[in-house]
Amino acid sequence: MPEGLEIDHSKPLNGTMAAYAEQVLICTGKDDWMSKIEEENSGDNLAADIKELLGRGGVYSDPYHNVAVANASFPSSVPKREEVQTTSVYLLPSFKYIPFLPRVSFDSVQALVKGYILPTKLNPANEGLSPIHRDRLLRSEEQQQFLYGVQDVKDVMVLICGHGGRDMRCGITGPILRDEFEKFLPRVGLSVQKAAVEISQGENGEAVTSPGPEEPARTARVGLISHIGGHKFAGNVIVYLPPGMKTADGEKHPLEGCGIWYGRVEPKHVQGIVEETVLGGKVIEEHFRGGITRDREILRL
Image 1 (cartoon, rainbow, N blue to C red):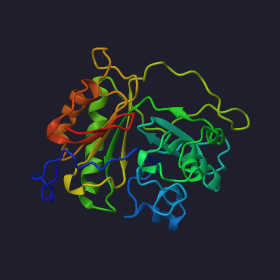
Image 2: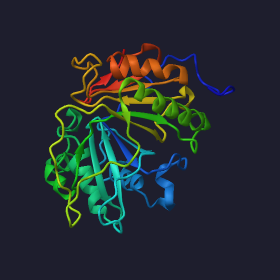
Image 3: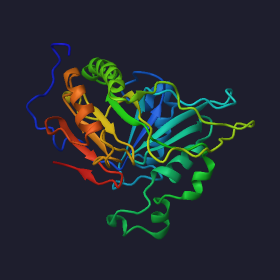
């Protein structure tokens, strides 16, 4: 780890993860972004569109359903008709991958939000809202039909804050940690996938669904993401373990379907995170900032 970085080693990490219901990762294919990601490309970007709908004053704004929107370095899937510009998105801990969101269609953004991001059940604090307002804030599975090729995420997802445009502590540590994870994961039998997710498509570009394996493959994806809070705790790492994952000895993984947030991670800690958390299903208390289950239960020690 480079010397001279002002990392906070005094404040307890447990509980420093802000509670959230869903993390939206926008695949940009870039390693860094402007300080406010919604200002990329003069405001013409997917993060801005999603925040317009979900942010304060947005038509789907719900203070009891916090959605964290971040950019990620993962490349987007390529549609068969390459002249159609699309963007891919990961939804975690829903463990869903939406490969094709047309950039010229705001209707597709609404379909994403209404069909996949909004809750299936409202917080009791929203009971005072009108029936029309409550219905607006609930998920509509009918909207899912407008987005094709949606896949379950079966990879172990290792996300590292590398947002140098926001804070150079993460900008410096992020790429270093990514290299370390990419080097170590294959040593324990987890193949690191770097190419864009390939979606089987028919002659007209429609997605062709093929039955996937019942259990997640022994694969992982390691990416840099934008601001998640807590730059002073760099390096910041989130590990999502896909549903159905098994431990190294073939048993049910105690953390399958969960996202675990770690702070103050250095290259020397990568092996321990992979062996203890990814393979063994154990939380490392020294680095634990918080976590989330697939049922949106927030984990604290």
